[in-house]
Image: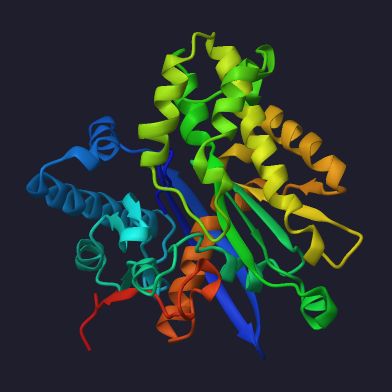
Length: 366
């Protein structure tokens, strides 16, 4: 899994078991590998590359990923234990309204390097069916984290999903149904601002906490047309680079004040999104399960908790391995479903029907 914040390549070795429709998983090993600076710069600028250079980058990222997986397998002595590699790739273009979603990182190269079957292109079919192709994780959340109804991922982009519990689904009067959408930018913006001060990220949100919320910038952010659109909806990386970043650059504020304002924006939009699920939430114990790199930002999480409190919603954070690798775990799970030819995406994305997403590259000879 490679997230939009470009903080590295997440790898997880996971085993899955299904007994009478009930799934469980065991996260055995995990690792995040930093991108070399040159590759990271190329990925950041990928949308502006020539077609030939773009194709070359797709191959180069596949070789980097395939080699990283091979090293991971060797380091943990996993030879002959890995039955399937699932490659999400790195998203460059995402415009579902025009039928476009592009994740690079050649799965063919990964299969060739490791001689293991690879599944990639997990979003393409859903988009072809008129869906957003995002978020992908609700299917995994439904089966692997069924104790929770509401999920928040604080990655480069913040996304939220309401996945009714079994009890809620059985209560026909609740009208509960799976809903998911991208909320707004998150670590893309926070890490960019921290970078202006020579930091990879704002540790614990300390700089943001030292700043003040600027009402003018906050209002401008919240008035962007995307936030008035109904779900299902999703964001491309260009939402940050072409819309949000210029607004931040043009604001005559200190970095601390910009960070504080962006945190206020993120928290407010998350509360608005989570609050929209309340009519379907058929339980007194309302908790939102938070994962992703932003879950380590204690100031951000505290602001989110404060924004959710008026709705009676509490925050819940799992142990660090789940915080950091939940999406990689779920990508693996989607690959297993694809291999079994079971639905990987439900029609909650706006697609005309559920689908079995993913293309297969055979790495083994039979």
